[in-house]
Length: 177
Image (cartoon, rainbow, N blue to C red; front, side, top):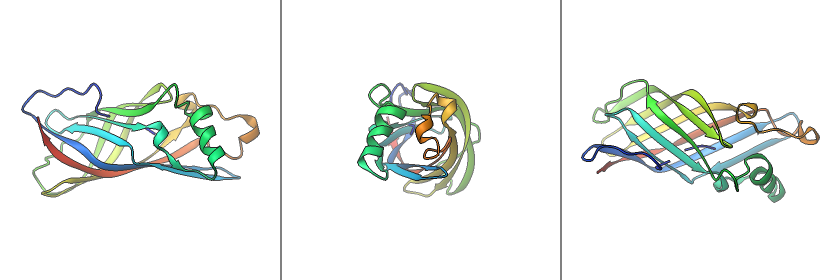
């Protein structure tokens, strides 16, 4: 539900990494129902030298759900994708990463997670696996619906969790400006 390339300006000549492919998955594990959807419409850029990043997800890109009606309600009533077509996370890397040195990095990113038009400052842990051709990334975190002013109608309260588990994974590839 979140991530993008908009409004990200890096000085020319800097080497950037862009999301080559990625998947965002959310799971709502409520007492009466488990809802799972995934989205491959994820884009983003990271500048390791400046320690800045921006990632976004197209909200209508989520597929899965338990029925077409459930998917329709998700888009129209909860995410309101017609009003908020994208979710994003942008900010700064707290921990250093040298993309020229292969290895596994456990880092933290601090920034603004914007879902449903409501931004919340967050620190999210990310694992990076650096090799010569590309960088693999993965992250898992929880989103509280109340933090993003997404309300659950009483009639479906037992079918939609208040805490949504989110995971994002994919690969980054170097891009020269």
